[in-house]
Image (cartoon, rainbow, N blue to C red; front, side, top):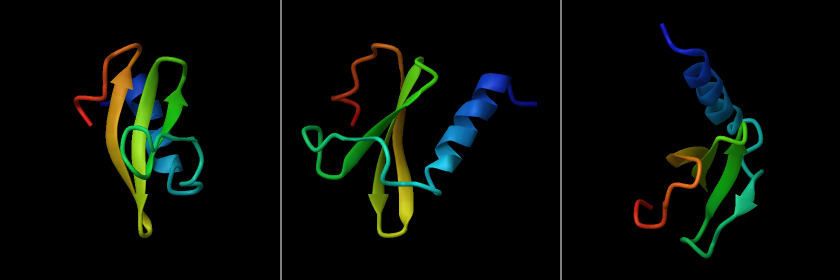
Length: 69
């Protein structure tokens, strides 16, 4: 059984398929990277490639992410 927060996070990632070009462009990190917030707790990093949304990472709070991407 999934915890409630994991389910909500999964739902947020799946919702990107409906409107994949939302979020903030972060070309300063790498070309095509976008971010969107999740419940003021985490940031989802993703990229739209052809007709797919690739989740690059989900980072909690103020975690440093640039080296991970």
